Image 1 (tube, rainbow over the protein chains, first blue to last red):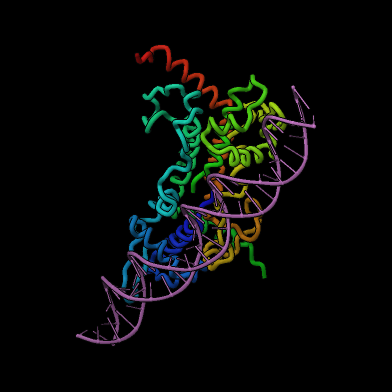
Image 2: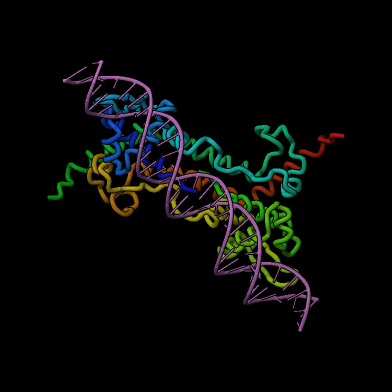
Length: 163
Length: 163
DNA sequence: TTATTATGGATATTACAGGTCTGTAATTAA
DNA sequence: TTAATTACAGACCTGTAATATCCATAATAA
């Protein structure tokens, strides 16, 4: 139950792109060095982001990556779903087990979402939890973090002159 | 980014125990058949639950498992953390990268929780999201689901006479 | 004591995250 | 046009964790 490193890389890469938006674009080499990860691997991740319309890539000399849309329109949820996939975090392994016969008996199939077969009550709770998570992740964007960083730098530097 | 099958098994097993609480305890054999999983594997999971004080186990003839505390005191979060572990879902891989030097500059180490080194802003967002998830999971217990099942059975049967 | 039941260790198997390498395509500078 | 640069796609490798089985052992009740 952990987010993959790829998600970590993706988020940090986007943060970097969002930060240096005045420069046209950033090459994979610079990104890789900044994040401390190999170019080969990072390029895989960037490709995914490109295929999903999060970044734009220009090949050739002086090419590189740039955000495909404003930083405040790229939510954490977007990024995570591109990298981790869109399958739900919990799926009941056997909705047909005796367990469900007992509990749901003949589970009133007008239920919530008319999923395949009778719905699992455990899955329902887990689904609700996931929605909570998604809601929060959707409310936070790349821009959110950039703003936070700027704020911190200002309030941090004005009397934090440690020399 | 998926919950393991073990978590699925654990939750369903506890649900079963909570349901047949009037009977003293339930053997691994019955549990395994009910859930449609092998005894060997399920017993590993039950052991974890026992070590964490979620269930009690009695060996010997007519032995088995029973809930170690009332079903409304066993939260989904409890169960998940026993099975999946208590590590946080997201950890920034390199807090010392150039990335963080740029963004956090010298990240004001009176920060939120005084974690090791300067705190990562990405991690901070992810941590917030995880808290949302935990909050929800903590509000739902084994009893919650049992109640839901009973409610559904009642309202489902009174005019759902499909024959 | 004996049958029963859970426990723990060892071991296999599989899937996947993480990562490297190579050749190809696209673009720009010369 | 050519050459250098850069992203792209695919094949491939590797270690680790999830899933699962089997067996020997300990504990308990009849």
